[in-house]
Image (cartoon, rainbow, N blue to C red; front, side):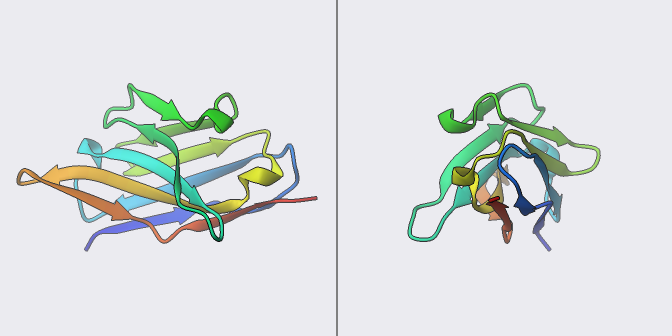
Amino acid sequence: QVQLVESGGGLVQPGGSLRLSCAASGFTFSTCIMSWYRQTPGKERELVATITSVGITTNYLDSVKGRFTISRDNTKNTVYLQMNSLKPEDTAVYYCKATGTSRSVWFQHWGQGTQVTVSS
């Protein structure tokens, strides 16, 4: 059974930090590209950060560059998003996504999301 379970969200003051985790099971995590997305009510889901299967290449949304860091531990089947210097506009539900192939067929798996609220 495929599962992606996010954790680590919560309420934080502006300027604070949070670390999101996404634990994967039921598929070959180490061969997947992993991504973090976020979504606010009434808006489309936007790509925040991506990391390749062995963690060599990362990409970020311009507005989070220098503040967020995506990383992964393939021994724990987990991807992380370290978020520093948080701003109110970072408030959203954050989702992780796995993109990979199985028997030459591409797949995508999504987590259920974790709420991040940045407010004083």
